Image 1 (cartoon, rainbow, N blue to C red):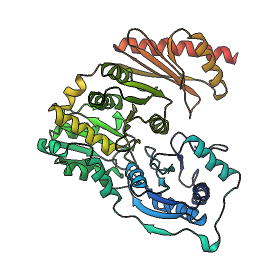
Image 2 (image 1 turned 180 degrees about the vertical axis):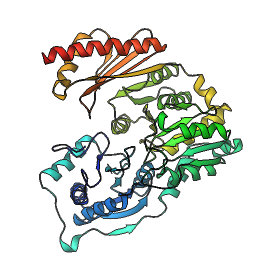
Image 3 (image 1 turned 60 degrees about the horizontal axis):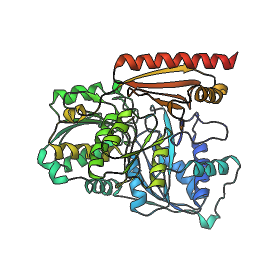
Image 4 (image 1 turned 135 degrees about the vertical axis):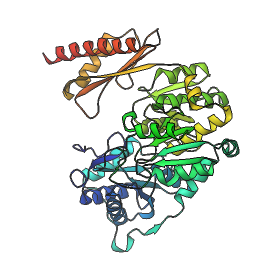
Amino acid sequence: MLGPRRLFGTNGIRGVVNKELTPQMVIKIGSAIGTFFQHGNLIVGYDARTSGPMFARAVIAGLNATGCNVLLAGMSSTPALQFAVKNHKKDGAVIVTASHNPPQYNGIKVVWNDGIELSREQEIEIENIFFDEKIRYAEWNGLGTNRDLPGVIDDYIEAIKEHVDVAGITKKHYHVVVDTANSVGSLAAPRLLRELGCKVTTINANIDGTFPGRLPEPRPENLKDLALTAKAVGADLGVAFDGDADRSIFVDENGEIHWGDKTFALVEKHFLKDNPGEKIVTPVSSSTLVKDIADSYNGEIVWTKVGSITVSQTMKKINAKLGGEENGGIFYGPHQSVRDGAMATALILDIMARTGEKLSNLLGELPKYFIEKGKVECPNEFKEKALEKLTEQLSGLNMNTIDGVKIWFEDDSAILMRPSGTEPIYRLYAEAKTEEKALQLVKEYSSKLKRLIHSLQS
C-alpha cells in the first residue's frame, strides 16, 4: 500500500493494479527514476503478471522522457536481471514485479549498478523527485533510446554453474521436482537443473499471470502438491520459488517441507567449513539455529533489521560473502549479494553431491528448534512508546533491539517481538527446544505486551 510521501515499502513499490498503481502513476515513477539516474543506461524486465508488459512500457516511457536509454530484457526472474546489470556494466535496472504478492498486485524494484536494490537513502531521493515535482524531462532531441537485450537467462545460468561442481552433481543423476508458481522461475531453474545432469519434473511450470496452480508465496500451506509429487515420483529434492524466483523453499525426499532457516543453516555450515571466520548476515527474525551453526563452525553472525535489501546492503558494506533469511532467501556473495532461488538450489545439490547424503539426513543433523508465532493488537501511534517501555522492562536480559526486541535465554530458547510495518499489531516469534516452551514464551510475552499497551492507552 502506498502512503503519504512514501513510494517504497520494505521491498520496492507495490500496489493493486489500476487502483493503487495505474499506468499514469507508473510513467511518473519511471520519470522520477530516470531523473535520479541522470541519462543512465538501464535494463528493464518484468515477471509473469498479466500487467507486466503494460507497466514495463509505462516505465520505459518515463525513463525515455528523461533521457535514459533502455535495454529491454523482457520476461525474466529478478536475480537474472540483477546479474545482467553487473554482467553488462549498466547503471541499474527497473524490474516490474510484485514478488510473492497475489496476482492483482504489481510493483517496481529499482536496482543499482552493482545489481543490488537501492539503499533507503537512494529511495528517498526518488521519492523526493516524485513528490516535489522535480522531474527533469529531456529536450525533444535528447530522448532516450530502446533496444532489446537478449541472452539474459543464458548468461545467468552459466554464471551459477561456475560456483558449483557441475561434474560432481551430474554424476549423481538427481531427480528434482520444481514448482515455479506459473511464473518466471520456469525460465531458468528447470534448464539449469537439466544442465546439472538432473532429471526434472515440473509442476505449475506453464507461465500464467493469474497464478492458477498456487499463490506465488512459497509458504508450507501452498506447497502440498509439491510435497506429494516429490514423494510420489521418488525425487531426491523438491524446490518451490516465489513469483520473481529470488526465494526458494525445499522439500526433502520424504516429502517433508523445510522452512528457510534450515536450508540456509545447511548452506551456512558447509560454507563455514570451507571459509572459517567469515561473517554471516541475517535478520534478527532468523532462527537461533543460524547462530548455533556460526558458533560451531567459527563464523560471526551480523544481525540486521528484517528485509532483504538490508541484508544485501549490509553484505556490501562489510564485504560478507553469505546472507540468508527464514523465508527462503539465500544471498551467495561470490555469485551476487542478493536473494537468488536458482543459485540456492544449485548450492543445495552441490552439498548433497559432495557429502553423498540425502537432504533429510543433512537437515536432520542440524540442531532442532520448535517455532511458535503470535500477535498482539497495538495502535500504530503506540508502537514506538511500547517498544521503549518493553526495552526498559527487559533490560538486563541478553537482548538485541535492532528491529523490535529479541531476547535469548540460557536454555537456548528465544523470542522476538517487533511492530508490524503494515498492520496495527506486534508480531511475536518464539523458538525453543520443546514445543511447550515455545508456546509458553508466546503466551507469557503476549500477556506482558498486552498489559504494557493497555497501560499506555489508559
